[in-house]
Image (cartoon, rainbow, N blue to C red; front, top):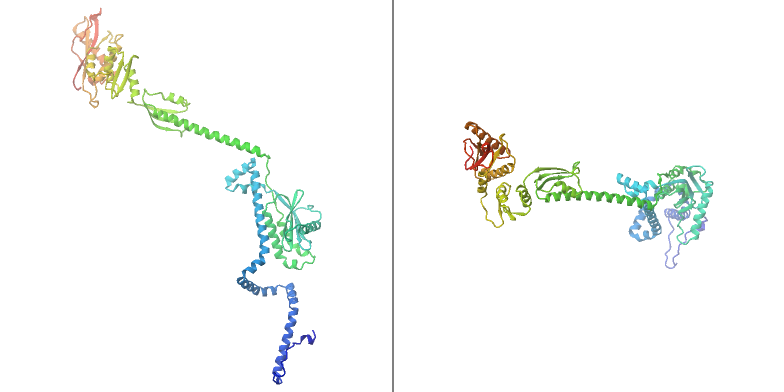
Length: 573
């Protein structure tokens, strides 16, 4: 730089207005000389400053660290004053980045959905559904854990600008024949895509298919990472590739800035590349069942489930119907009905004239061995059962119709008088029945009829003190009459006693006759007690008296043993 280029030209004032300048002093001259040198030095520094910054940045990062606070403060102040300027500056960067993130997320969702649908109805899929239920994991997660079958066979780290292969790693030898050729091919294809298709120049090729292998490519400002994959890798693997690129970019920033073809410095990236050589294996389908087979299996399972639930419902309904019908049956009281044991059990009370529970069970397709029934006997006052009991105990002929209302049995039809007289007496002994009468007849006192029947009854015994043949009906009617007359005070009856008299019509001496008559009366008394009559109301008359209605028609009237009865009003002692 010559002296003329360093001169500073100053404008001169008009001569007529400028006063004459005094000569500068020695101090002022020295100051002017230093100011001149400072101006000359600043001009020179401005010309060499950019070169000095470049040299300093290449040698170390001291200048960057020194300028960082100033740059950050200036950027913050500028953003605060004009935020739109920063948004416009980074918009070209954020737009593609956001679009790429959305596309990758959507690709991951589609791949996960496709994998889930493919395996949801297969035989293996049902096993995985059970595993998901057992472990509590989502079904899609279980499917992915079993179907991610892939292997990264090789990975290449390429300098994007020059296409030079910086480093590579392979799972086994021989996977790639010529690594440099692969690097050059990928770079050429990337350039071809960028030059041949309309769009953003920064759009890059991301996936290639080579036979059964696929090549996944990720790019950074200075690097390209390519992975050779056999099988189907998950979309999450791209995130691992991008993470590897970021680590190389940060760790080898200086080497990448000053890269001149020397790849030896990038040998340290081998651990990072080897971490990308991942493989995922899982058990494949043992039998590749088609969707139709899966539908058939599902249909069979649904049919089995429907049959099982239908059978349970049918059994429950059948049991409930049985119990409901038993509860509604007159004369049957169900106290407990349960099916929780080994054998279903019904416990309750039953009138002997009610419907047979076994018949009810058979109507519901149960056998005796299917249900255990425990019944306690009891007497029901249900009108239907009372009529059944009355017809049986009173031996009602078919020509007579019985009705029951308010404790009174009414008979209609062709009535035999002898039967009716005896039935009046027997009816009073039936629980719930007060009397028996004809239709339209007023109520009568049945006790008078019973007393008359007792007085007119004479039982004839053989010499061995046993009833002669044909006397069973007489003693049966006698017992019914006595029961209707003798009722405890709690039942509202009148206390009566029955005197039993024995008669011996023989040719024996008096003492012998008296003894035989007493023995005959005692035999009949014991027979009455055995049939349910309280012995306290039965008294033997030991005096010798003729029978009330002596029978003289027999040829052997002089050798007869008879017993007669008398009703008296008295309280037994």
